[in-house]
Amino acid sequence: MIAAVSAPARRQPRVLVADDTDTIRALFEKLLTNDGYQVISAVDGIEALDAVSVYHPDVIVTDVGMPGVDGIEVCRRLKRDPSTHLTPVVLVTGLSDLPDRIRGIEAGADDFLTKPVHPQELRARVAALLRMKQLTDALDSAEAAFMALAMTIEARDPTTRGHCERLAHHAVRLGRVLGVSNDDLSALHRGGYLHDVGKVGVPDSVLLKAGPLSATEFAVMKRHTEIGETLCAPLQSLRHVRPIIRSHHERLDGSGYPDGLRADQVPLLAQIVGIVDVYDALTSQRPYRPPLTPDAAVRHLLIEVEQERFSKTLVTAFLDTVDKAQDVITHPGCAFRDAGRGEGYRPK
Ligand SMILES: [Fe+2]
Image 1 (cartoon, rainbow, N blue to C red):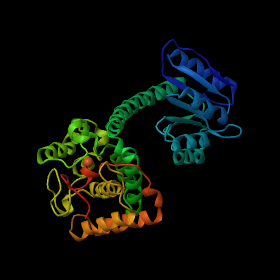
Image 2 (image 1 turned 90 degrees about the vertical axis):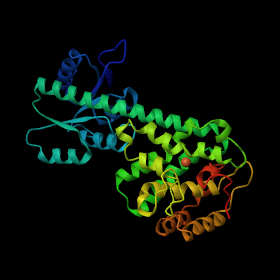
Image 3 (image 1 turned 30 degrees about the vertical axis):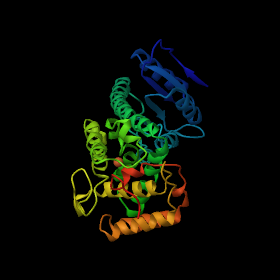
Image 4 (image 1 turned 45 degrees about the horizontal axis):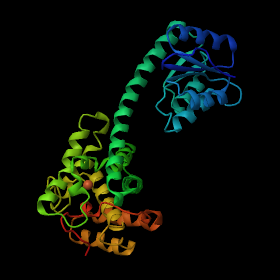
C-alpha cells in the first residue's frame, strides 16, 4: 500500500513516511500534512523505495525496524543512487539502539529521531532538512543548466559528438589511476563536460571552420578558456572545475594558453583533461582528415612528452589506461583543431 494522503493543486514539499506501525504512520502523516506537506506513506522498505521512484520526495522519514528491507537498507540504497543520494533521510530508532545509529551513519543517514518521537522535533527536523534540500536543488539546477549549455555547444559542431562524455569518462579513469581524491574525481567528471563551455562565446564562423584558423580567428578561439571560467565563477559548487576550464590548453613548456603557465603552475586536473582532450582529438574524424590510429596518436603524445609539453608520468599512466581499455578509441569526432596548439596545427 502506497498512499498519497493529500493531493496538492501545485507542487508542495513532499515527505515520505515509512513505518510498519499504522498508528505511528498516521500520526506522522497528520502532523506533517497540517504543516503543509504532501505526505506519501509506505508500510515497508520495498514500498518506500517504490514510492521514492514514483513521487520523488524531498525528505524521507523511515523507521529502522521494518519487515523485509529495513530502514537502514532503504537509506543505503538511496545514498548509493546518484538520482537520490542528495535526498535527506531521517532514521527513526529506539532510545537504546546505538548499533542501529552507527549502521545508519555508515549508510549515509542525514539525521535521526528517537522513539517516542516528539511532534515538535519531527516538524523541526523535517523543516530543517527541507531547507537543505531546496538549497541543494538550486545548486543542482544551476549546474544542470551549465551541463545543458555544454551539450548545446557540442551539438553545434557535428564532428565533436560525444567528445565531452568521453573526456569525462577517461579523465576520471586517469584520475583514479593517479590516486586523486574523490573531490578531484568529481571535478574531472564535471570538467570533462564543461571544459569547453566558453565556446558559447565563439562565433560559428570560427568554431565550425573546416580549415586552419587565421591568427585572428585563433585568438578568438583561445578566449573560450577565459569565457568559460568567467561563466562558471558565480557557482561555488564549480570552484574546483574552474582551473580545468581555464587551463586545459596550458602546456608545461609555457607554450599553451591563456596564461602561458609552466611546469607545476599548470594545475594537475587541467593537465589530465588536456592530455585526454588531445588524444581524443587526434583519434577523431575531422572534415579534412580521417582519425589517426591509436598507435599514431600515442606516438604524437610521446613527442609532446619529449618536447616537455606534457608530463611523462601522466602520459605514461594515460597510455596504460588506453592499453587496458580499447573502448577509449571508438568515437566519431572531436575538436582536434582546438585541442592542440591551434592555428594550422597538424600531428607530426
Ligand atoms: Fe578547449
